[in-house]
Amino acid sequence: MMNEIKIFSPATVANVSCGFDVLGFCLDSVGDEMVIRKTDKKGIYLTKIENFDLPYEAKLNVAGVSALAMYETLDLDFGFEIEIYKNIKPGSGIGSSAASAVGSVFGMNELLGKPFNKTQLTEFAIKGEALASKCEHADNLAPALFGGFTLVKSVSPLKILEIPSPDDLYATIIHPQIEIKTSESRAVLPKEVALSDAIEQWANLGSLVHALHTNDYNLISDSLKDVIVEPHRSQLIPHFNDVKQAVLGAGALGAGISGSGPSIFSLSKGQETANNVKEAMQSIYLNSGIKFDIHVSKINTQGVQIID
Amino acid sequence: MMNEIKIFSPATVANVSCGFDVLGFCLDSVGDEMVIRKTDKKGIYLTKIENFDLPYEAKLNVAGVSALAMYETLDLDFGFEIEIYKNIKPGSGIGSSAASAVGSVFGMNELLGKPFNKTQLTEFAIKGEALASKCEHADNLAPALFGGFTLVKSVSPLKILEIPSPDDLYATIIHPQIEIKTSESRAVLPKEVALSDAIEQWANLGSLVHALHTNDYNLISDSLKDVIVEPHRSQLIPHFNDVKQAVLGAGALGAGISGSGPSIFSLSKGQETANNVKEAMQSIYLNSGIKFDIHVSKINTQGVQIID
Image (cartoon, rainbow over the protein chains, first blue to last red):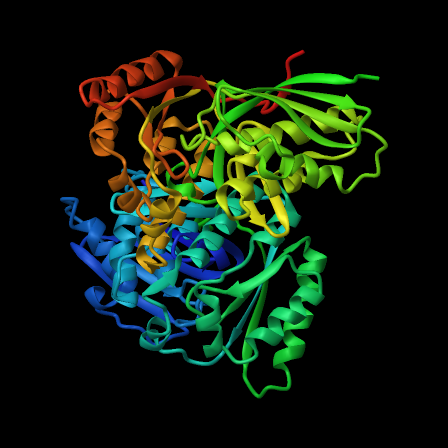
């Protein structure tokens, strides 16, 4: 029986313009690596965390909290050690906490012989995610676990739909290294929205789901609109409108805020266009004095996976 | 060259719970018959209207207005006569005006050798529909023209998506013969909605589109919810909640308001269940003193069609 496993837990993009709070997709070029190891001592132990200064106490650590949520449903005479090699910057808006929350429970489940399905793993991971985001949501967790595009139909009961997507779809994501306080990104959300705007948003979301099913890149492009949240949150992201205009000029299908920002995602047909979009994004930020990371990634249809 | 054509212009269900203002589907067991005939005299002429007392003057008649909208884009040295054998009661909420608006332009297009595609025909029909409903919308027109389920992504520019649906899907529709004034059904619509409700609605619509693509009847059932409009408009329909409870008890996948009411639609897997749902609907209204019509129909995937 396996005693140790190394996994890749991917970054993810949540919201995806018209899919606010429900849609997400999975990246493959950026993610955390984690080692999960069985240990004789009962309990959950963070034994190594590299690259970022995160808490070692399990109940204060996102990966630890999701691990504990699973662990406490079992009656095991052994425990688990967790090592985190963190590559996704916390607060970047590409699912850093979700990757941690997912990685621990995925790895433990593998070592235990897969007693839980992916929806059950998401339930555990929600507990870890809640430590970071102060509310229970799954729009980054679901794509990290299932891969591809996911639609979280409801959190309670948890119902996750896997939406197919075209093979040649690439994401380009820029992370301007500014801090947006969660409280601030929440505060700008409207509590009420015009019915006419809500109708436009769900027309676009229904259309995007149809476009993903039918590999219709033009319709994906037409549907990547957010009339509800982006007008507010984009004001917290310097050069957002310039970036959006530049990437559309470079051939992107669309662009929007990744999660609650500050990262900006765009989607493109083909890797070449995604690389052109990268150039366009860089050109906006290079003279801004704001540091940034930038990623080009195929849509990762597998999600979290074993690498050793 | 054909000089006369007889067509069947079907009734339709718009809104479909979570798809308020964008989604619709087409029926095959109820619809109008119309005859469109070329005539030497230039212009559009209503020459026969059976069953209901509707205006004969083309510019005051829904079928006439849509016909004129098309006719005026052409430079013909002849005209058209229109006969309407109206079976869909005006004001029933199953697309009576849409059937008229669609029938005339579809028939004329056939007689002219199909110069226009279905989206263009919808543009003309919108003008007729606007005469009846005082605003330009296409959520009944699109399913009447295209058949099956349609999603009107936007009206301007007009973009209609054809959503596939499972083969064994049946609708049962009851039309309680009460009058709901358009002004009243508009007045109860909220101008603003809670963001949380809007999110739930678009999660359900995204889910319904996915369910229709994947033939997932359980998910269709789970998705047929309307947290935005039904709570308000259902109060205008006597026994709505009783009917809904009864049809779910009889095995329906879901139920909701057809268009702006007063008709109530439900969807079922299989004709037998749809017939049981009919019994359940009848049982609620039989002792109410309210007259009603009731229809069981397969989803009509063809839409408006030639019958002679």
